[in-house]
Image (cartoon, rainbow, N blue to C red; front, side, top):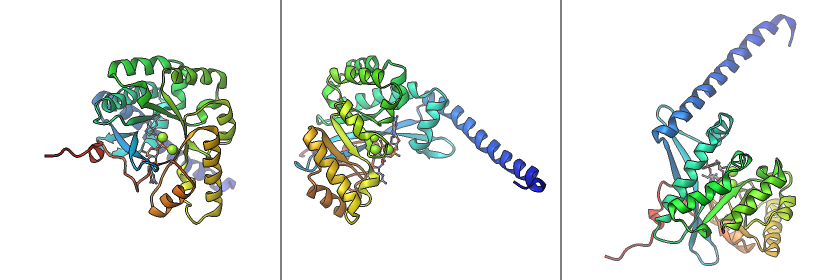
Length: 273
Ligand code: C2E
Ligand code: MG
Ligand code: MG
Ligand code: MG
C-alpha cells in the first residue's frame, strides 16, 4: 500500500501465491495419477423415508485417499478436477462404479449420483448414462442424478434437452442444495424435477430458528403441490427430525440416520441363521 513497504508487501504476497499455485499444480498432477492407481472410492449415505421408516436410497459420495496427505474432501478436489479437465473421466468412473455396486445390492434401493455442471457441457451424458445402465444391468428407475441449479445456468435450452433425454430413459433427476442459489424457484417452473433436496444450511437451524422453519415449510408445501418429492439434507439431531416430520417432509438424510460409509452392509436385511 504505502510506497516504502510496497515492495516487501508485494514480495510477501507473491511468495504466498507461488506456494498456493505450487500446491494446486501438485494436486492436479496427483489427481491424474489417482484415477489410474485406484485411489478413489465411493462412500454411501442412506436416505430414510419418514412415512414408511424404510431406507429407500443411498447417495454415492466420492472419496480420494491421497497416498501422502490422506483423505481429501470432494469439496476440494472436484473443482480441481473440473479445472484440469479430469472431471469427465472421473464422473464416468463414479457413475459406472455406483451403478455396478447398486446392481448387486440385496434390495432394490435407489442410487443417487452427483453430476458436475461441466459433465453437461460436453453433451455426451445421455449416451454415457445409457451405456452405463446397459453395462451394469441396473434398472434405470433405480438411478437418480443430483444436479445443482448451476447446471442450468449456462445454456438452459441445451441443458434442458439433455435432462429431458435422461429423464426419458426413466432415470430420475433431483435438484441438490435447493435454496442456496439465486433462481431455484424459476428452475422448478422450467424443469420437472423428481425431487428437491433442501440444503443442509436450512436444516441446521431447526427447530428453533423461525425463519428456517418458515422457509422449509414453504418449500415442502410447494413441493407437494407440484408433485415433487422432498428430502432434507444434513439432519443431525432428533429434534431436527421431529421438526421435519411435523412439516410433512417425506425423506431425510444426515449423520443422525447414517454417516457416509464404504458399504451398505449395515442396512442390509439380517440373514437368519
Ligand atoms: P452434496 O451432494 O450436497 O452432498 C452432501 C454432503 O453433506 C456430503 O459431503 C455429506 O457427507 C455431507 N453430509 C451428509 N450428512 C451430513 C450431516 O448430517 N451434517 C453435515 N455437516 N454434513 C453432512 P461430502 O461427501 O464432503 O461432499 C461434498 C460435496 O461434494 C457434495 O455435496 C457434492 O456436491 C460433491 N460431490 C461428492 N461426491 C461427488 C461426485 O461423485 N461427483 C461430483 N460431481 N460431486 C461430488
Ligand atoms: Mg448430492
Ligand atoms: Mg446437497
Ligand atoms: Mg453440497
